[in-house]
Amino acid sequence: MYEIGEPEIQALARTIRRTMNGGSLFRYGGVESERFEEAWSRKIGVEHTIGVNSGTSSLICALVGLGVGPGDEVIVPAYTFMASPLAVLATGAIPVIAEIDSTLTIDPKDVERKITRRTKAVMPVHMCGLPSNMTALMRIARRCKLRVAEDCCQADGGSYKGKRLGSIGHAGGFSFNYFKIVSCGDGGAMVTSDRVCYERALIHHDGGCIFRPHARELGVHPFAGQNYRMLEIQAAVMNEQLKRLDRMLGRMRRVKKKIYANLEGHPKLRLMKSNDMDGDCGATVGFNFESEKQRKRFCEALAKSGVIAAGSPIDSGRHVYCNWEPIMEERGAHHPAMDPYRMPANRTRTRKRRYSKGMCRASLDVLARNAMFGTSPAWDAKRIDAVVRACETAAEGI
Image 1 (cartoon, rainbow, N blue to C red):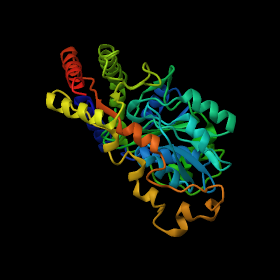
Image 2 (cartoon, rainbow, N blue to C red; image 1 turned 90 degrees about the vertical axis):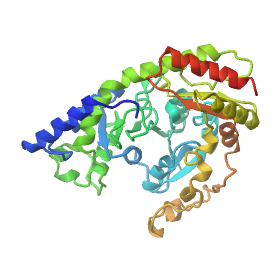
Image 3 (cartoon, helix red, strand yellow; image 1 turned 120 degrees about the vertical axis):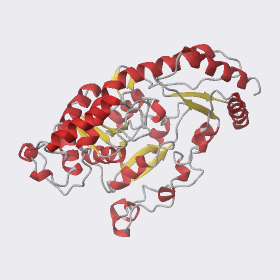
Image 4 (cartoon, rainbow, N blue to C red; image 1 turned 120 degrees about the horizontal axis):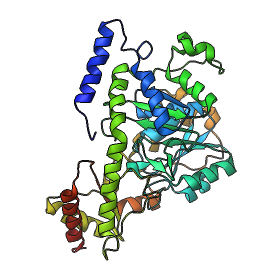
């Protein structure tokens, strides 16, 4: 979380006082959740938003909305939080892991290689605020008749070629976890402009959907859903966080662009490419080195500067596919009968590939040679100059 303060405190106080005067903290009966969903739809540029309780829930709802289920495969990148493949398993489908490229986002070429007759959808993940190559991915999706569910959990408010992330694919999911760009501690939002997708997700996110006033307006026949509803207190905080979003993104983008401008052409530093620098959230500055040894030297020297520390995504553990133990060992549910890996619909000769720790060697190589650090909307010119000088000094010892 980058910023929080008095506006959020006042929003929570208003919400609680409203409850004391006959209002509600429940999703239905309050006012904050609807306000947030309408505002988020306008911000992202979509027809529908469903506020939910986590980013994982948003991804599950997106996939359910798109009709993903047993017998299907969904392609996800090798570098993401495990929530991405877990969301696939939650629908009864099988996650297929694809390579990333030097942008740290899914490699469209490997997506094409991983497509089978079982492939139903692709889930590009806009990691660390870095937009995926949506032009190539949407071209593949159109040609192969695939659905695209954008994982925007680490890229709230980001864009690609003038369109907000989440509005380019057929559905998108956002996270408002404490570690995200805007946050209410935890929470999320599923977005789409497809009415059928929206209605399916709406039913799935609320097990009591048939008892709500909007039930009579649904064209999709009700089915048994879950409980992923957003709370009024989460929505109240998000309505204030949303007011901060574009200003924070603008500041981080300026920070990143200034750092890049100062380090561009440095003989020993190769800046990590972005698929769209203008739409990039500006949350991460990255470097691609020729070897892991060079990367380690740079990170060690930078740490000694006392100005900024850089880490490698290979060391993040939970974001690297080979550390997703339940996935790698194909334990997809608490009960064998509910485990997608053991469902009859998913037992097919077309799914010959099995997971192994070395299955995405290109991704492991990219991650090991990459160094990165996060930016902040609070950085001023003095701080930026100090970071640039520290990077230049650290590069001398490579």
